[in-house]
Image 1 (cartoon, one colour):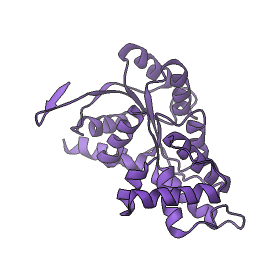
Image 2 (cartoon, helix red, strand yellow):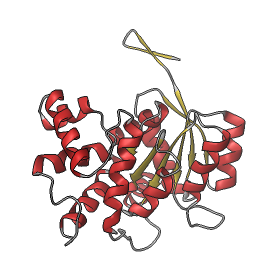
Image 3 (cartoon, helix red, strand yellow):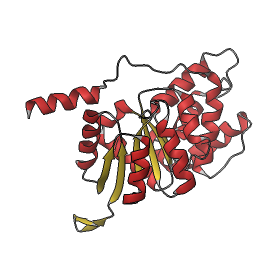
Image 4 (cartoon, rainbow, N blue to C red):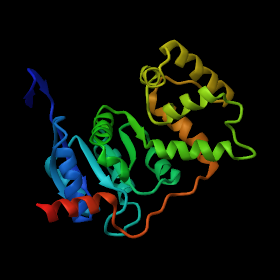
Length: 255
């Protein structure tokens, strides 16, 4: 434990999986400089090495790229699936450059609790990455806002979209639900009362024919499964390099 401002902060131990060295170093720096009691206990570059590091270090959370050796396809999701079976208490944050609901659903369908799907472009914001780590450690779920926004937009433009009966405010609330927010957090985000949020949530689930549930993970999954019917196009980037890689390389050159 580390002491800060006369309060004790429990250190969260993290195993990081990322095959690109520069990106791996960059994410490690982001986590290490967060001042939120996070500790990267291992930083490795393949699916097998992530699972080995988990057995050796016993982390609270695994933060992993979605594509790594050996196949470079969906190792991050495979890691999450394996850990749910072997170590169900370990949270997993999957980092991806693909704004693709298919990947998000593959991660969350076996169980949304303790899982997050975050776009890599978000990790420059320490607050968002740290929040995702803390959320999965507590058993919560996080879906990147851009994934949610793309799904809602695609459904709104569909002739047979299931969201057409929702009001503008209900769409806003549904978007917040899909991001994994509680009623209290939604109320704060939209500057309305918790009771108002509860009314909107009841109306949304009634209009969509979904059973209301106090379980946050089930709420996230219900929203995502509904929105996934739109078939939103994935966001592709040219080449393996990311903005984070470019930034870290620039930092190394200056240093």
